[in-house]
Image (cartoon, rainbow, N blue to C red; front, top):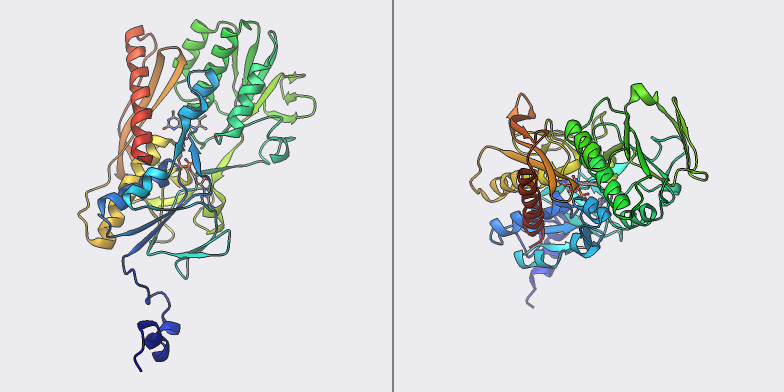
Length: 420
Ligand SMILES: Cc1cc2nc3c(=O)[nH]c(=O)nc-3n(C[C@H](O)[C@H](O)[C@H](O)COP(=O)(O)OP(=O)(O)OC[C@H]3O[C@@H](n4cnc5c(N)ncnc54)[C@H](O)[C@@H]3O)c2cc1C
């Protein structure tokens, strides 16, 4: 009687003793958690550049991805929801297997992840790219139960639509209060670009008596001089920024009445309160104990490898990336370094010293965009700036328009780089 391969392995005990070895596909396996700016890029580049030699599985619960980047442009009316929504379909052409599910647990000891449906995916290398979670308890009186009444819109999609609907309902003379987040958080200039877009949309609707008050826990913020110059010039009297020395601390918010209490003043009946709370690495990274006391994941700057588990790479907002901000540009750049290093480890592909880049553009008013960015590299155990640049106050209209053209081109380029 002839035995097939499976019967033979079972008879010799090999199937029971070494279940992971007995698989038809002997390619090394990379599993990626999270199909955002970091994860989607990493999945694509590992699959594409390994020419099919690595088995790549991307696990992401959503069927489409709505980018936070340019969601402020949706708020201002410069883009529609379709323009910031992307499909994972084309990634399959590179050989990426996409599983629409949530990873419930990382089993580091057995090198596998468990999905919501209790199935497992084994890995030789794991990329963790879950982005951020919001600290719902960081703003007294607010919490997840109130995120539709006082939206954060710091994860894009439904929240972004709620924020715009509420913005459009603000009456002339109404007050918007934005609670800005403490460092470190996703997209340092994001809250202030958002304020610009809110002011623009109010102005377009003829509501020039509406005002936006920013309660900020920080002494200063990204591109501050540039934003404040823009607000004074384009939205006079509409935007008021209050740092901690002025507002003397945020005491509480009351979602039922739209009240915001600071040490300095109480705002009653705010027409819209946009709470952007403190942030931390996504739950899956925290549960797997890949974070340190900061709530984010320490990494090796030469590779983006977790400093805690060498078989795991952490990229994007969840990682502690030194001088790099938490941005889509940064996540995409880190993903390419991780993808290269993993190909080097698993199939002996050639690797080069890590180099990272970032630019963040912010639209202040139509065709008036400012930028900040730099290049980065490993230094003294962290990712450090090599060179930086930032727009200047008083730039010409032509320069600002050129920067908006760059911004538009960047969005088209990075989303194609992630998803096509
Ligand atoms: C208003 C705003 C404006 C911004 N503008 C810009 C900009 O102009 N330029 C710029 O570069 N950046 C910008 N950003 C920042 C940018 O969106 C983020 O830095 C970037 O998306 C981070 O990428 P990531 O891959 O780390 O996380 P994300 O893009 O958030 O992706 C994480 C993914 O992981 C998935 N996930 C989480 N947990 C699990 C799990 N357990 N199992 C499976 N999947 C999971 C999530 O569903 C999500 O799709 C902006 C952000 C905001 C909020």
